[in-house]
Image (cartoon, helix red, strand yellow):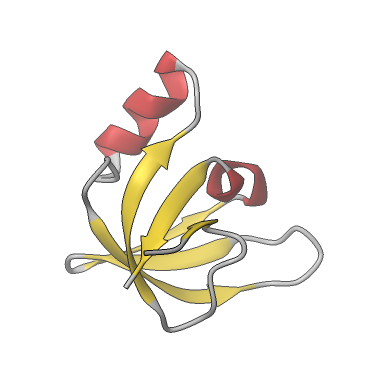
Length: 77
């Protein structure tokens, strides 16, 4: 399986979070949003010029900032 950053993932593709390269505080923030290692996500859209990245996890749709999305490494299906 191929591992890429959430930013490089194509739209409407599914993947599983395999790594979150962030500090303790940001990892806790991700956990409170329901994002953790092993969680399956679908990338919905990515706005150009460092805009937000929209993802779907479970029944929730989240918009992550460009820098936050860059810290999530996804294993593609």
